[in-house]
Amino acid sequence: MTRPVLLGLLLATLPAIVPAQDVEGFWLDLYSAEPIEGEALIDDLAAAEVVYLGETHSVDRHHALQTWVIEQLAARGVPFFLAMEQAESFHQNQIDRYNDGDLTFEELLAATDWEQRWSNIRDYQPLIEAAHRVGAPIVGINARAELIRAIGRGGLEGLSRAQRRELPHELWLGDPAYRRLLKLQLPVHAGMSEEMLDRVCDAQIARDATMATEIVRFMESERGKGRIAVVIAGSGHVSFGFGAPDRVRSLRPGVRDRIVLFTVSGDLTLSPEKMAMAEAVTISHEDLRALGRPVADYLHAKPQSQE
Image 1 (cartoon, helix red, strand yellow):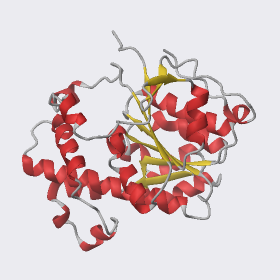
Image 2 (tube, helix red, strand yellow; image 1 turned 45 degrees about the vertical axis):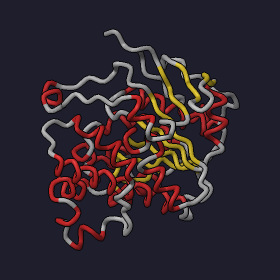
Image 3 (cartoon, one colour; image 1 turned 90 degrees about the vertical axis):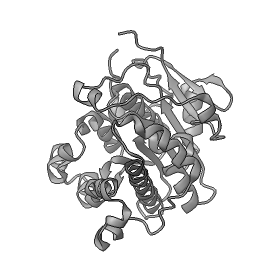
Image 4 (cartoon, one colour; image 1 turned 120 degrees about the vertical axis):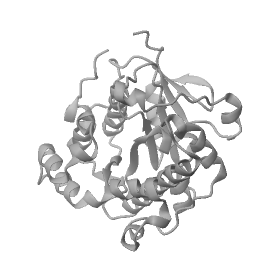
């Protein structure tokens, strides 16, 4: 399977939807339980205020499909900004220099130490550059990595006053359905005690709250007004509408959003080191049915890889 060829500025002048020909699979509308054509999908996304493109960070196919979505929005002249979990909000001044054309992508990587702070950031380069070419601002929405690690290790109570001031005032730690889901998912990291699991849940929620705050802040800024927020984040931060979507909804009641996910379908490979740190988890239909929500609005699916 080859990665899609980016069409650059030419795409922004095309009136028709260009199919993602190099990406095997099809789109499903999870509310109608029927396949949906790419053109109809983009019709709906173009009318939203926030579009969440949930991903598995290391699957190239997911990045290719995310790039396809923003190219199709650009082809219709839909203004948007790219809100990225992969960029920390405290780097926004440097990111704005890239947005304004004062830094190249390589210079941005150096100015933010981005390759050390997000190890596979180059996998996102086609996506970032596709947005940049059509004038879509890149916005860092994540919390500082050191802050999230501090919560995971010592809890919120272990933060200094300066660290706590970096987080939103309201963290809303007590959503029982979301915590139940996290406690089903997070034991994939081996050797996690119940106390550690609680701290890691709090760290995830702190990250969600920060991302939601930064999304809404930019939406309401002069530069963001009238633009769709296209959010690039791990699927765990957006699935079932928990995490970032619920928090954006609480900050901006009545917001029109859409959640788009992509199947892994055997495309995820882990290094021996990561395999050694992983634990098998089982989540049943009953577990998920109890959540009372669909996992997303749309899903891109492909046959399970047999390699």
